[in-house]
Amino acid sequence: MESEEDVDEQLHALKRQNAELLQHLQFRNEAEDKEIRSLFPNLAPEEHVIDFFACALSSKILLQGWMYITQNYIIFSCNLLVYKTKHCFNIKDVTRLTKSRHAGVNPGFSIHFQDPKDKVSFFSFFDRDKAILLINKLSQTARGEDQPDQDEDQEEFDYQEVVASISAEGESAFPEIFPAIPEDDPVHAHEIFSCEFPMTTREAFVLLYTNQSKFTEKSKLHEASSEISISPWSPSMEGKDSGWVRELSFRYPLDGIPMCPPSTMVHEVQQARLCAESDRLVISYSVQSLDVPYGTYFTVETKHVFSPILKETPNPNPNPCLLYTSDAADEEDSVDLGGRRIIKKKKKKKK
Image (cartoon, rainbow, N blue to C red; front, side, top):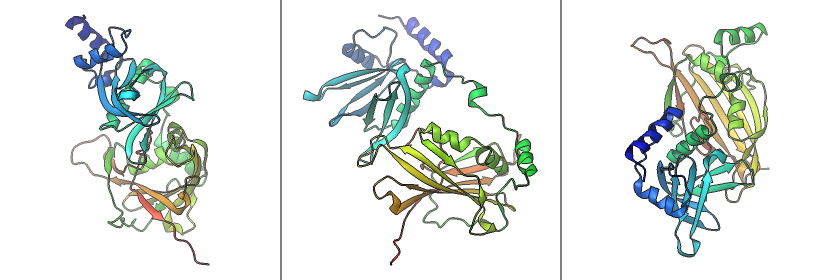
């Protein structure tokens, strides 16, 4: 039996490896520690249950049980009569997690491993995001990815240089329009989330949305999309006060969603408008899933709204901007920025 001092030393060692796990690593789940050792007696003595979740393993039926997460393993146990089962997955073999829903309503996620054929799915979580966050952090720690190489994962960004390079090519750097951008219909203005960026709206556009930016491509790759094609921005055909538009196409994985193919081609149209007077930036998205049953009968419409805010207290950046965002990216593990979502059904034209 380990002493209290030994357990504390292990806790501090792991905290030193990854400071972001500080709020998660609380090795005081003694009953759960006994349970995992009854399931797998050969577990190393230093393995302790960090957290545990009631959930269901996707099989021929949903097998309700418990998921136990230790420093190095994801353990699942089900005691349902003839369906009694147990599994132990090594966290260092986890390559990515993808959010999904069973039957379109039951929240869960899939765990992907180094072998592409290996994948397990769990549903019926009360707090799915908490489990995903913990597994992601432990997986990064196991692979030594806590401090990614800055040259590979971060881009140098100089706002003035980017703007100057665009202007040097004789192009406008921003999709400026002079009339105020109208507010959304209250029926559709469903604000889900907002956050503050330490930059101006123009800096946000240059960093995230210009043709030179890699943000859109990287976010699509992060959510495991492929066959990505992004056209350059061009003036909207609807007139000079409609800003810029561009088109994207990509193949998006559906990860076993019922009655759907393994993946679907997606057509996305983006519109960018920047009010020259107020510096309010609106990025609108209209998305169609081409291979999903009835997918061409409706579009999912999303908006990112960047609005300047003024600070009364001193701030290194006097004009930060506020981003309104929604759950448009809720079904993936990407750091996609959401927006306001509207679903519009297409009307058939009478012949």
